[in-house]
Image 1 (cartoon, rainbow, N blue to C red):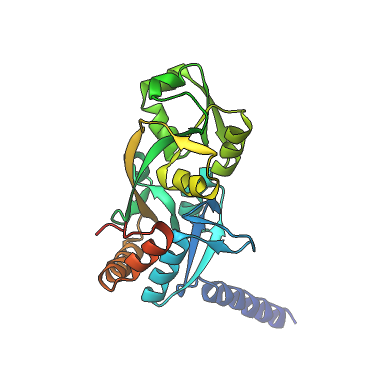
Image 2: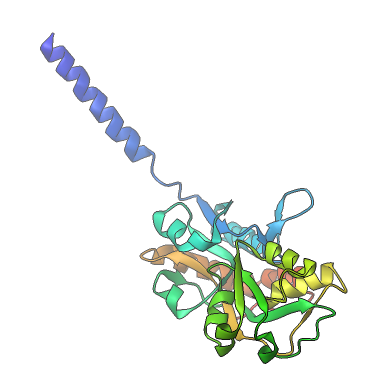
Length: 254
């Protein structure tokens, strides 16, 4: 009886080990971490469906790679942790390339230019950065907007309020709780087009930047595959097609 019990236990342990081995990562699917309130890059439409430039671009790249794609909304302030934990494969949603972030993740080549701008109410009398002194300024937590403001001397002269996403910051700007919002130019222009007569941009911007796609360090194979797919989308005109759909022009970088 003891031998039989031991034999049964050993078989059970072997089955558990084999089950664990067979339950590895599905390499046929890319899980992409996004901020689902970052229009026009990635956001939800009136039917609560994910849409946007980066959503279309990612789908096209995944198809080029022969992979399925799954979009995973994440807390944008924890994006690198989500990537490094393996819960997502890519950070892809208006993700600005910075030296600090290069220490944490691998980046593709830049695919889109952007800048950090100051959105203000259309009736505001502010005209330049120095006018922000003593004003209430909002921005998204742990974003490149925060980095850009930190790097500018005006930071010490303003009261900063941080928000989990740009939508909430712009809402407070519209209702008068804020005097200005530091925000990506592509995002600001999208909401300006959707709500004409609500916002305008300060004459001075904070910092030019470029968007890239973040890959976990050590996964050079995925980075190479992804970059090859992006290069092909540029060559065959698909990247330009997606850009014209969302921006009215080909803004995708070589």
